[in-house]
Amino acid sequence: MEEKDLSGKQKIEFAQARMPVLARAVEDSLSHHSLGGKKVAMTIHLEAKTAVLASYLKTLGADVYVAGSNTETTQDDVAQALAEQGVNVFAKHGCTQQEQEKFLRNLVVHEPDFIIDDGGDLVALLDNYPEFRAKVLGGCEETTTGVTRLKAREKEGSLHFPMIAVNDSPMKKLFDNCFGTGQSTMDGILRTTNMKVCGKNFVVAGYGHCGKGIAMRARGLGANVIVTEVNPVKAYQAMQEGYRVMPMMQACLIGDFFVTATGDINVIDNRHFGSLKDGAILCNAGHFDVEVHMDQLRRYASSHREVRKNIEEFVLPSKKKIFVLAQGKLVNLAAADGHPIEIMDLSFSLQFLSVLYLATSYGKMEKKLYPVPPQVDRYVAKAALSADGVKIDTLTSEQEKYLQSM
Image (cartoon, rainbow, N blue to C red; front, side, top):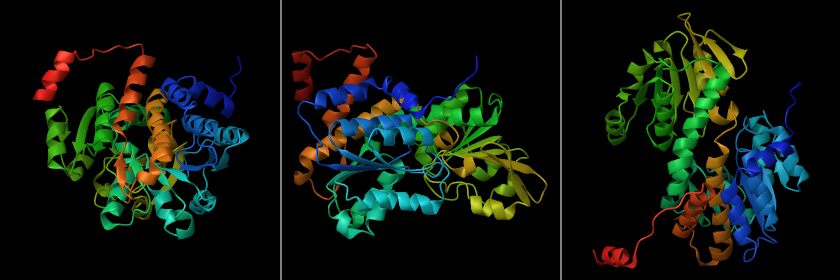
């Protein structure tokens, strides 16, 4: 039987059927919440799961504007299907950096009331448009990188509207960052290289929630996992959990696969390229493509070429060859489909409910970074358990009284 590509509409329908928590949040909100007359601007990796969130925001009456948050992670068929639903879409797979900046500007000039940011780019761009920035009532941030940037802004007094740190919610960082990043990163590596991981030395740079998930999944596939860290507490935790811990320079001599997940720049650069094994494979799972210093690598290498889709070969002066996946961009999205649907069901439920919270509370909120409201976290957790048919215990009145007396 001849295989046919799914249309963007079919991809969205497939994802939507597997996002019961978000569906329940929408159903529970329809009777007492409305986003009618409000504009919501989203910059986020544009694929089927994102499209479900955008369409649900539209269901509550919002005028929704979406731009991709990365030049390589937009799925054009999904973007087209979303536009056909009446969502305003500014995105294209493989766009130039200049086109990407134009897409983001399109979000800003439409004067959004609420924003959903991914990495802090939209908040930063609004600095160039104070007349539009003044109209923003609040927003949400999805990533560790973005929250880090927002914390710096709050500290220096340059946060101009309330933002909710969705990334820091337990229902986000414990599942999306760990289990989602772990599975989707390995998916990107495996489908791109078609190589085995078992028995290989697999180096994970960074042992935050994302790095933990990657290390866990790589070990599950039989890899010999090595962790590099700058934080002594995290390094010691990695060691106690059974991983080898060493500096990156030492890991370069023995690593077969390298995944960066630190959120910082120059994790692998000219200090390391010459020490890498012949055939080493590098990729990045951090938000920005700054962890593997690609400009330095291109200058250092004698030549480079694409040898397989999403795999670039670099021939070093020593004649050794190393390979970079997805141009050093987010490997789980640039070379795969991102986090599992059920994981993003949780994260996008948090985003959806946080936007509704902003819509009813923004007049009482200061220009600060806020956590996800605890009741939102609990709602998502309970809905997720219910969707899986899982019941849990409840405290007796005697137990509650005992705990309150402690």
